[in-house]
Length: 325
Image (tube, one colour):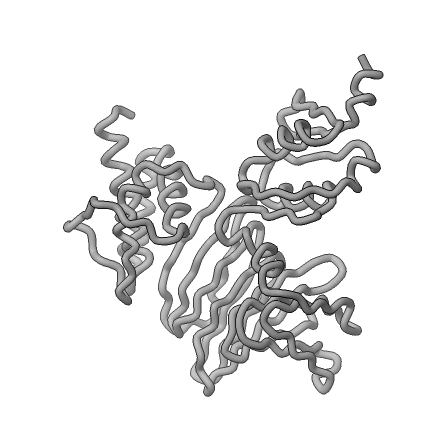
């Protein structure tokens, strides 16, 4: 790919992203995008970079593109054109923003490392995390999300006539003019609220409902409330740093930190020593950079890293590594 071709493809990738974030994305548009991607496999990476940059806060640049349709709603996203063309963002983040009409059973599945932003026809915006599967059902009387696995954050548009309910297994979470996330874990379903109030209950006992307000989180399983935490909004926002392609560690054990990185990357982090796994760590990292995280751990703690296997990054006590030589 020569310089001129690469530059043209970057610009075209940005145009596709701008079009997807507006109204009226059609089947013809989707076919055109797929044909463009199929013509050169390198274009997939360019599209991911453009989509990732689209998630960043507004960046004003002197460049403009008169030939590209402006996004709806007064959004100044296209002022980011210079950023879209030159910034290497978290490449694992994919922010596919397609506006759908009333849908019956629309399904969304994200791959490992993919994050997808999806505006719905009612004005709600879903941000879907890595390795997630969910189904959307919008009707004239209800808005229902079925989360089969993974995690998603919802900025819910107010509509008193159509309740917005997320179901994950037996757990239900209903928005009351709010923004919140739902994550399906082995031990239950975690609900984090960033704005407004969410009401949660289980299918087995709808009479017992819990209200979770902004800055609070709750873990619920089929039988009961497992854990409830009321805190400042900041810790909840840190837990949702993935929306911007980041992992925000705040006193997190290395075991849990490794689990977070492994949610997004094919190359898995392995903590070989249980004592090391219990060490706590703070820091802000890109979700697609487990190598950078491991190097930081090496420089901070008494550990060594073993990268001889391309499938894993093994973190060990330095003394353990030395004794093996």
